[in-house]
Each structure stands twice: as C-alpha cells, then as structure tokens.
Image 1 (tube, rainbow, N blue to C red):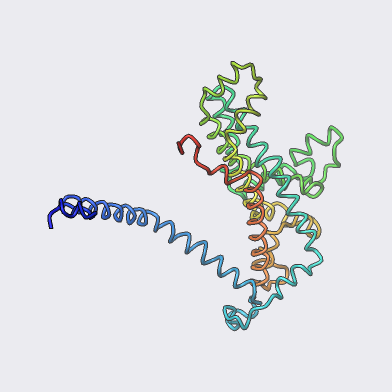
Image 2: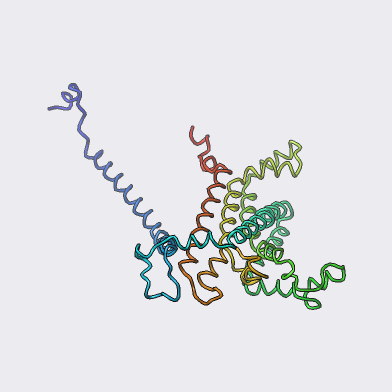
Length: 338
C-alpha cells in the first residue's frame, strides 16, 4: 500500500530510518546521562548508608534490648525475643528526667538565641557594612574558637575562671567588688557553658549569613538608600527577607547540633557541679552508654536516650519548616513558570 493510500485511510506514514535512529540515540543518551548521575551519587549513597542509616537501625534495635558490659557476648540483642520497652520505661520513670529535659531546653534555647543565631547574624551584618578587609579580619577572629582544639579551648576557660589570684577574670572582678574570688565555673556553671559553646557556634552562622548577604544584588541596597530607608529599615525590609532560606538552615542545623553536642560541657563541668546541674540529654546518653559511675556500660539504655533525642530533633526540624513555610521557599520563581 502506498503512502498516499495510507494517509487517505487515516493511517500514519512510516517512520524514516533517520527518524527512528534519532529516537534510539536520544533514548541511549538519556540512559547514559542517568547512569552517569547514579555513578556520581553512588559514593555518597554508600557512605550515608554505611555510616548513617545502618548505625541508626542498629541503635534503634539496640534501644529495645538490655545489652550491657555484664551480658555482652551472651545476650543475643538482635533477636525480637530479647526486646522490650523496659529502657524507655526507665527513662520516663527516672526522677531526674524532668531536670535533664529542662537543662537541655535551656541550653539549646539560650545558646541558639544569644550566640548561634543572633550573634552570628549581627556579626555578619556589621562586618559586611564596614571596609572589606576590616570585616574579613573580625570574621577570622570569630573563627579562632572553632579552630582551637576542644581540650585546649576548655582549659583556657578553666584557667580564666579559676580562683583568685590566678584566674584572669577574678583579677578583674574582685577589685570591683564582684564575687568572692572563688572558682567562677562552680559559681556560675550555666553562664560558662553557654558562653563557651556560643563562641564556637556563632562562627558557623556568621559564615553562612555573610555569604548570603554578599550575594544580595547591590541594586536592592542602592534602591533602598535612594528611597530614603535607614540602615535598620534596609536590614529589616531588604536583607532579612532575602536571606530567609539561610536563616532556616542555620536555625535548624544549629538546633540539631546543640541537641547532640556535649563535648564542651563534658570537659567544662561534666554535668555538674552537684547532681545533674548542667547535665543535658546527649551527655546523659553518653554517661549511660559509655561512662557511668558503676563501670557497667549500659549500651541498650544509652541507645534509648539517643533514640528519644533523635525524635526530639526531627520534631524541632518539622516545626521550623512549618514556621518558615518551607514549601514556599522551595517553590520555583513565578517568572520561570511563564
């Protein structure tokens, strides 16, 4: 049948060899591009699976068991027959549970508000509104606490807060009639915990906010100045709305980081002075699992504390995404949809 007759009867003309070959080559190109993408992603997927997903599953299963140093090698903790909710019942029945929860909330809220977010944003705004080299110099100074090894950094704080006449802070405060010259960390443990951690945490947000502010088109800044806006009005109505996405990232990341951090607290106060005075949730999980007073490492019990901490972190991240309207932030610009 001729092509003309096929067209008269409503048929379709046969594909030319060149046309069918073009479709085959386009399919092959798409497959190659996908394979290349999967090839680039595979190392990251492997690392995340090995060092994140598998440990999370192990910790979750371990939290239902009673594995500890005394029964290690004899308890088959991976079998469902040895699972129970006893560890979680012990946590919520612990008389210090409310105190540890309050300590964690206080530590995260104050450190995040005063340093990891507010101070980071303030430093970024100030150092981007002064001479460029001067701003760079001050940002480098704020990076020093993060670059200093934790042990040396905490030893510096302990030395500054030690008793008079050796402590630098007491040498300044005692002549002014402030304090009695005793160990300041013992007197004001929370102040030193928050400040010592905040000086480290502020540098992360500072770098993110500085990059975001520098990326704002200068035309927006000039337009606000031409319209007569003050510096505060420019910050409030131009800079802050333009860096809403970095703000969400810094607040969420730093909240999760503070929830899981305990290194500086352990070195500075180890949860004291006294009984659980500065003990936070992550430090409690460490103490129960790896370093308790009785020398009996309770790995299953510590894992249960860690699992609850993960749930708290996921809940906090979900709240932040709802408050900052995450769905609107990830939408494509409307002009791209035209």
